[in-house]
Every structure is written in C-alpha cells, then in structure tokens.
Image (tube, rainbow, N blue to C red):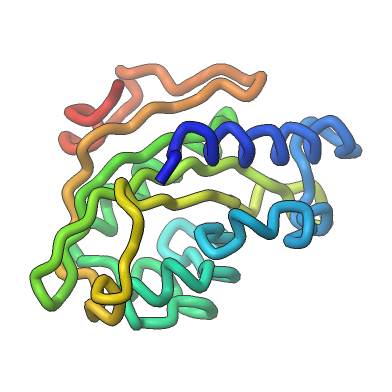
Length: 188
C-alpha cells in the first residue's frame, strides 16, 4: 500500500476539518465519511469514555475482514491483548494531555499465527461539548491484503515498533513524562 500518500490524504482531510472547526480541534460531528471514501475501509473512530474504556465506534471493513472479529461497539481494551492495555492507556494519556496526533507502527500476530506490520495515524476530535473524546485514524498494513489474508481471528500479540507524537499546534509530550518502558523504547 502507498502508506505515505494515504497518510498525507488523511492528514489533509483532518486539517480541513480543523480549519473549519469552532475551536482548536475538529468535532466528531464534522466527520463526513463520503469525503474520504477511498480510505474508509481502513479508517477507525474511537470514543474515549474513560481511562479504561475506549469504545470502537467505527472500524473499516478491510480492518474487520483481516481479523474476522468485528470490533465496532466493543471496548478496545477488551479485545486487545491484555498485556497491551497499560501500553495504550499510557499512549492515550499523552495524546490527550496536549493534545497531539500519533503515528504508531506495530507488528500484529493473530490467533492463526499470521503476522502483519500495521501503521496507524491518529488525530484527536471533540464531542458536542468541545471535550476531547474521540480519535479518528487510518490504519494501513505494510502490504496489499489478499483474499487469503482474511479471517485470522483475534489479535494474539502486538509488538510496538515505533511511536511518533505529532505536533498539531499544541506541542508533543516530554520524553520524561513517559511512564511505560515499551512506549519509551518505541519513541521516535
């Protein structure tokens, strides 16, 4: 997949929403799937309800087909490997503190043993009251997904390879504030 070109297209869309927003961040209500139909199979939308509850509001069809475990409506922390929960809580804490965007590169191994390199670019969005409550992102596999790449089962293991916090106008987290060894090791 042309990861960089697709990430550029996704970033351009998010920045257009930010430019039209009433506040410094775009609202979830501004998201119009028809404006990025070509990317939609790889788009996700997460609602951050609390530190331990992150509801998957949208998971693109291509992403659902890879795992064969529909994630929409589920708490992400209930379907990711248990050892990853603290890792993603730590990342989310820093994404919301400033706020900022993130580029996450990881290797995902599914229940059937297949491993995929995935890159995710995520941006913050607000709810109707202006609180940062959502993340919208684009998750792309490092290679074109084939018919025999479908229905792999749930995620058995995930290895964070690289994490880059992206300044969207508010700065990026201070490395000294990171309090998780895997996050520290993966920081770009």
